Length: 308
Length: 297
Image (cartoon, rainbow over all chains, first blue to last red; front, side, top):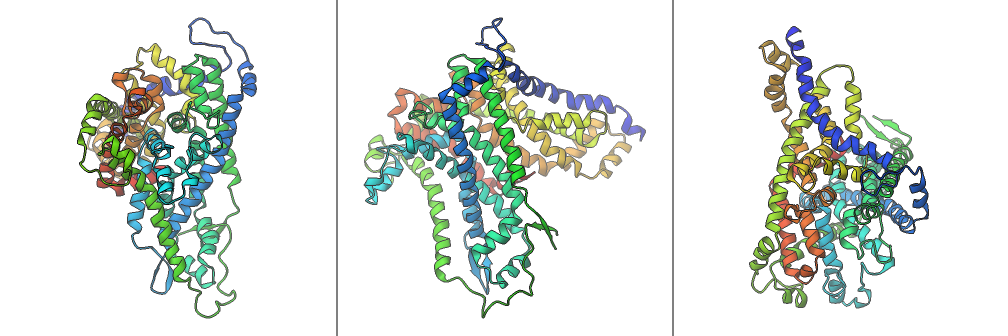
């Protein structure tokens, strides 16, 4: 159509170039520069950039705080997604199939909508706000958690949750799980609603209990969602910066127990001015994220059988 | 409908269920409710506690954490708003997020539309270039980004934050809207062309209105993401007068002067949470479907 061709390229240029320019300047160029900077000893003073090859990466391997960060991020990568997905699936299943109506046992529970609304709310709060809130909850003397434990007579369990090296990281991970469960519960819930009823009824008629139905029928049908959730939560766990920086002593303490890669990078760059070294951490984090995503998507690929 | 499972459901010819279908007792029923209520308590109690504490005196917070405030101390809120600069941070957040959201939606929808509806050489390359940004952690770009913004003289300015926020929101916006524009019918657009509408006219007058559901979803997604930014302002926005909300609150919580002012900090937290809570109560269905659609696409 002649009318459609008229002015097409002018329109395309006008539509794409502004966005592309913005994206190239603030996103693409920094990403590209990061790889080069990681091979230099740049300290931020212009004109004093020496190419040092892989020296920064070699130093990373001897850096005790980086290795601690690597270990902590690794543990978070395992615990946070698994706990969040397990809880999210369980809560979604309870809300969707936990009720009992008529003769079937697979009915929605009463108040399902209320639960979905309430559970989702923490997802909307920013991590710094959640971190501040939980700093108060974990406070050793006046905090909500210890206050509760003392009120019910469990004084012995009261702790300095963020002060003990063996506990601090778990306390941080619990907050990450707390803030994300609701979102995945709603996500899984939406997916469960689209499962055909006859599939579930067939399982029940076969004598499968609720748990078996969940494990063998519902979860496999949701596998794509679970996979997406795993990748998203993994990226969240590989970050951990805001929550650790605000909540923990040091931050990153006690004694490096909650050190994460993002924190080390931020500190190296903006406290010590070791920009080349910080860039190397960024590149390391990039390859970790990439490797994690590739492994998560590969490993969770299952044998699939078409159903009806 | 086609569904996928890892193994086929057992054929109906399997062993017949013995007697009436095994019905789990009332115990599991009650356990289910208990578990759901338990999580609801776990989610709401810290939030309610923060709101309640924001209306108490410091003494009350320490001595009677479980009771309602004897007399609501709205003074805490006004102290936080003015003395602790929460009001300034709030306005800064609103300016930066508002402008960044408009810019992101405008540029993102233009790019997504052009890439989705026109064929030209380099289309695929541009698309992948934009979408690749979703994969990369911001930490990778952090150090060079600081110097790019610094060289442009934009450190600690509204335009600097607005441009950077938009740039980092573009990849997902383009990705989401690209698939959305592809699903729209072509007939209406062609009719508009025949009527003498220009390319830009078709986009603004025909396609944008048609794409409204998608635009709303991604706008909600972007609003929450931008409102909750922390890392970018922390690095690019060192001027305390221009702090955004999350950044300002975090700075308050570590500054010595406010360490002991629990009620003031709780008031600040509450002020920061309320707009999101209010928006959620009003639009909760749209927000939930918008965000979950955003995650699955």
